[in-house]
Image 1: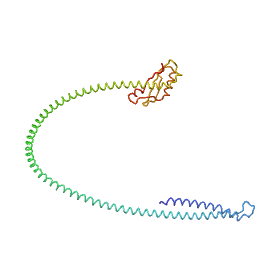
Image 2 (image 1 turned 135 degrees about the horizontal axis):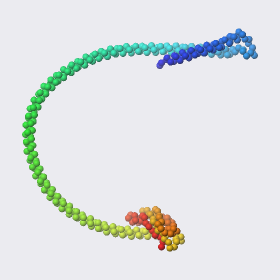
Image 3 (image 1 turned 90 degrees about the vertical axis):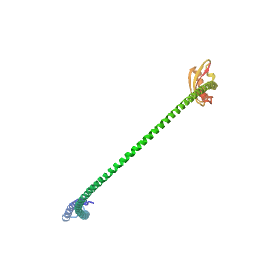
Image 4 (image 1 turned 180 degrees about the vertical axis):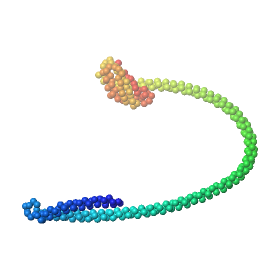
Length: 316
């Protein structure tokens, strides 16, 4: 920790206290002395002696002197600590400088040894390279002679193998040609057989499709007739279910109402739309539809689908 700022502050504060003590000593000692020499004590006098004030000043002065001594001691201690710290830093700096000089000498010596070792290693490496090159050259010459011998032997063997390979290749191609011709003949026979079977099968399937389509058309026609019959039946039932809820007392005689209704799969009336007719009569029809709420529907999906959106005529 750096004690120099503390010592400086303590010094400044000490000088300030000394100045304050001197001022108070000058202001309070002179009036007291003059009062003792020139004034007579009088109970009614405005300039009578005040012993309590003098005592208080004396006490303050004593306290200030103690504080001054305390600060002086603290300053001395701080200065001593600072001097010790500076001396310690100087000692450590000298030690570091000595070590640095020694390290420099050691480094120079090591660098010298390193250069010598590198030179020795380089010479040894050069010698090793020369010996290695000579050995490689001798080995290369021996390998070249062996290679020439092996090459001649290999070429002779390759020529013999090539002749044998050509002979075997000719035999293989002849066999492949024979098999290919035989396979082509069988393939043509198989193609003709399959083509005949395919034609017969196609004709049979065509006849079956025609028959099935005719049968399906007949079934569809029958179903369509049945569905339309069921639609007419349920339309009449729906109209009848609504008709019983129409209040005939409010229907205008001789008038009619044409209405479109949408029905859910379960028979619940989803919406109503008046298409044409007498307003009073149509109003009663609309009330009757809302009152009916649910109408009879078929359990067959295709019949119910045609009943989802129907037009009914009421009146006339």
